[in-house]
Length: 451
Ligand code: IFM
Image 1 (cartoon, rainbow, N blue to C red):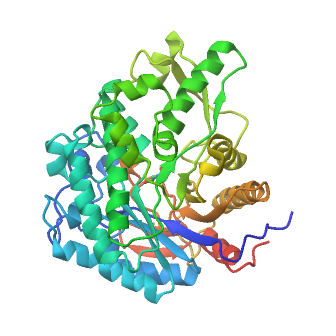
Image 2: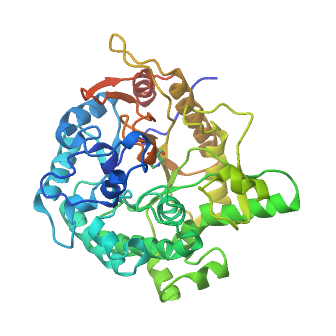
């Protein structure tokens, strides 16, 4: 099948996040984030890896933007490090200057800057005061958004206050395998409401600063019931409500998906929902793989081990019958089409234009030989997902762009450096960058030369 055609103004991009690439964690006034603290605790991150140096992007951003320019991307999604810019309510001028330089460099290369404001690196000082469990943090976040918006709003084309708030809630506050490492189970629900409120306030602060192109980057996936039985179908429905609609419904519909969740939230929920549902210019979907979910059984406690708290009405099951990445994630390109379709079905005309703000795969690529890194599986992944996206668009979806995760290999959170998602290989000892075969393939896609 020939490679599908995308509209001429379709935005081709790649994505990254501050803590995963920047390094320089104690430089130019950057204060610690929850991830610095988490990485310093023995046993938290595979191999004891940390983001202290990462890909040294803070110092090598010019080289990295050069790679993006040669790739031909129209947009680069990066995140701004909150603890670098506004660690304790006071602006750190040197931190903000870094993003000013990065944005200028991108613009000079003809690449539209797309900025995330919070990609999981809460300033440690704010976490010490309760973090996303407190209402106070939402005001800090709005102030930070205003500062960044005023400085960069003339050049940044797309804004995403939050990245994957469900992951922060689930892994950071409910299960504890991400920073800040809390194991609160359902007591983590305030982190949902406060991220949502922080999002809404940040959208308003960005708009007040004259910014346009404001959305979110939120992870979503189709939830498949493990069988046709009533209990599995019901379990899949509960899981779907939590992982797909707990954040999307308040933002796009101005209400929580079920009343039980609304009443469990802190604060003046109805008034907050009016802020949370401030209209967006786009909705960004991060897609990796579907979820197969069944009713939990007594075996699940053992299978899931420490990861899932007891008493949940559902349990994720392994997906079989599809290839998997080296990270063990199922490769299901049609899941992307299904995800887009489920948003269209649920929100209809209330759905703003979509971006795929992340999709990608980790393979344990070989080291470069003669300047080459063959990664046919990664090419197949993006090829398949772009074909599925083209199908969704042919079916009527308004999708404006695709950001491959990730530009370069980087720090994959609790998995450290073993997982490699990049189109560009990074040798962490020398910091040498080597474009993989997938980089050359994506360049051809962008140039309209893909076969
Ligand atoms: O690396 C992460 C990213 O920070 C958020 N989305 C998923 C990616 C792969 O796990």
